[in-house]
Amino acid sequence: MQPTNREQRLLASGSPTFSTRNSSEIAASGKWIYELEGTTAHKYLPLDSITIANTSSCPIQLTVGSHVLLIPANSIRTKDKIAYTNVVIDNLDSSNAISENSIQLTMWREPITEDTELQRKYGRNLRLGIQAGTLLW
Image (cartoon, rainbow, N blue to C red):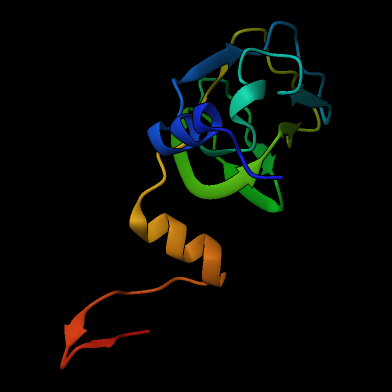
């Protein structure tokens, strides 16, 4: 089924940013799962970029799609070029809980460019260049 003109425009223009914070405490060695289905972000899924701000004193593990990132305490990290529909945060501290509103997620979908369309189509990172009229891989 071909995407409609509206869907194509949405993909080409990217998405607005969607932000959330943990609304409850995350227990020691506990986890928080944030599902994007049913939120205002659902029409842009899968999202492909995320910034996480961990203002707690506990290190955390962020799982987005098939990617796992370790986020130290009191730090901010950004990851892009990943496809995800949910976010899982694991508290790596076995003795301290993470208080509410200590973790902020900012998520979005990048606009589709010629480069990202080629990466999607050919399934690998391409480097385009002009050298005697050839395509460099």
